[in-house]
Image (cartoon, rainbow, N blue to C red):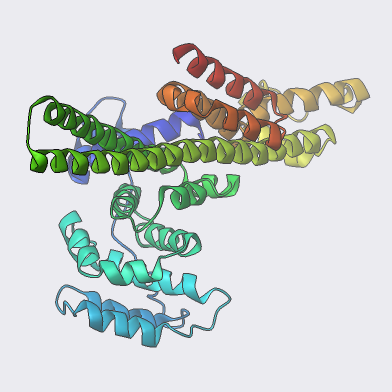
Length: 404
């Protein structure tokens, strides 16, 4: 079964999530002792330890990275000012096309790697050097570079990638907009990141939604308090307090307006990036179909059949005359292309994008309804042509239109 097979991906993801609640040895033992489950041990992740991205001596900026790592490690606990001075000195003039992005990669790699022991270690180091991190992660390019470093350090453990990125958004080191653009940068990026894209995406969308709910609760509480103050008699001092409360309510309303605009903009961005990635996926799937229509039999036999039984039990020597016939050859290629398309990585991911668009419609119906006009403009601008994605977008809109 290929690695991109939906069944294999589902089981692998399920086992990975089980590991978050247990130990690798216990999961292995449970699988081995369960009838028919022994083969699933191969789907368990192997080494889940952190990786130091600058481990190779000849790696670019390995010396600078080692020096920064030595400063931020728990045994040294260098003062924030000292680390900032080292960053300004050692990482100020890096010989690269994007020095600010490389500066962010080096510092974030050091912080995340030294915080690898536990969440408390990571939060302790990140909190200690929060001002330094913010100084090098001020722009979206730098924030996306920082995300690259996180996935390099925790390439063996996607659970920790999710955890670290979620903490970085909570600490306002990475903006939700930057993270969405990084997660859905392209179809190829989605292929590289695999399943954890969707987990991080939902955690990222949840942040502005939660902010809006908190601000709404604050506004309701402040309005109720102001109402009670106005209804009871009071002196001049009491009236001054009411005026102060009214001013605070005005500020909260402004914050709420901004928060709502941000969540709508983020939701529109998510839909836009999903459409773009699905479009790239569709183009690659179409190219595969064209290649097969052109009749590359050797390539088709390698990719489409898999084995003799998958090809209907016929061997290469059966009915050669039929295969040489134009009609028979076309039918053969069509059958093989159909088999391949159903299981090719691009067709599988086209189905994934379609399903995720449906999920977005169901999960965030109320929010999508509030920014429907912007989403419709986005769909029109991207000129969606893939039928599966067109249907998914139509279904998404139907869901949130019905629910709202």
